[in-house]
Image (cartoon, rainbow, N blue to C red):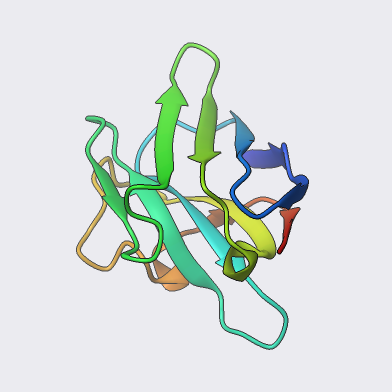
Length: 125
């Protein structure tokens, strides 16, 4: 049984930083991603990382966010720097089933079979 558990969310001021973690159990590492959903908005892909370490980012976070993983600890990370109020959302960790690579549609939530419960990030101006 695959379980994904996020942590690290919180409240910061604009320009601040946070690091999100996602502890994965029961999962053979493949393409994993971070998504976010703000109230009244659709869930959107933020970043993804494949087994080979290749990464993809949404344009809105390029240069500010970094996705990484520690395979020895089965943990996925999202380092978020220079946070902006528009980054405020619930952040979710997700994992694909059966694929080691992230497809060109990595940003679509339907690509992922497994989801965590989410961790809230609030950025104040």
